[in-house]
Image (cartoon, rainbow over all chains, first blue to last red; front, side, top):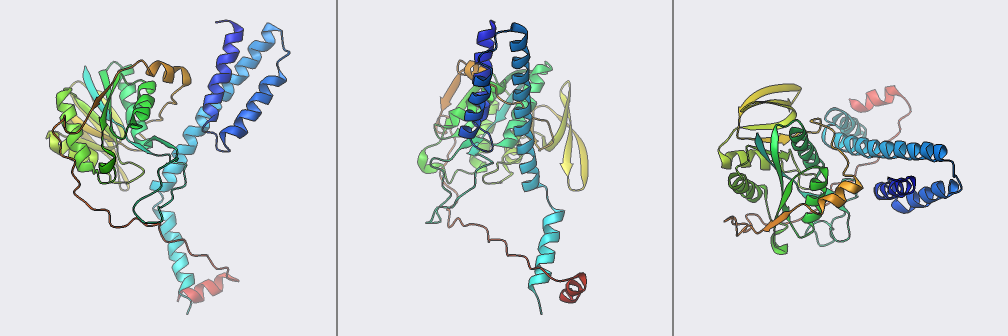
Length: 98
Length: 248
């Protein structure tokens, strides 16, 4: 694959991932575009390779972020047996003020 | 090698704030982001890993729901499922379809497809029923390994580690068997863009419950859907002694 198509594919992948970004797809897209435009004048092949590598790192980080966010949300929703009970207990105690 | 059937449900995305309709007939679903039930993602991932370990020969994903359920099936296909079956549920039945109907459908499809392992998520994040796996096993008259946090396959036998209150339980079940995936079974992969594109070429068969001979007429009537009571505001008290007094 030529370097040009690699860059385009990376951009598409990031754009796709950005759809689920917590702060919104638009937020992500503007920043993504800015990041790519910032390096539009880079011509050195070695330098481009490095930048693609950084982009792929961001892809991995985003995937990990989404996975963790989902896992934590579900864990909080379905596996907090002890803490909420404690919370409601304290709440009850406080609200049943004599 | 085993044939695996996975059930995937299209639900409102876990990150969306759920809103109840003003007439209390249900929740707002129009224009709301939907995605695959996270527990079903874990089930799909487990099936795909079985295929990668050459334990499974073919993975079939089933989704029961409206036309948009095909998108959910596509996600499953992008994760590595071989083909999909979309059981189309008429719009009128969508709110009253229950795990009992789904398990009849799954059992029928598992028998038709000669599936050795049926994997579903332990529960869906919309109705939290947690019944489908158990009832499917009952209809198939086969063993079940529910709340699986680890699954090992040795020949015609599965060793399933189950998450139970306060610990883990390990059971051995003979194939064919039904499994339900708990949160810690695995970490589902992300459906990448190229894979989603490739998944568009994979086949999805469309059937109706009638084709399968399953009656989906409602067994329940939804009386009212309401928001949970809002959490009461806490009170700030000056010191621990006051808390102690309040407690008694």
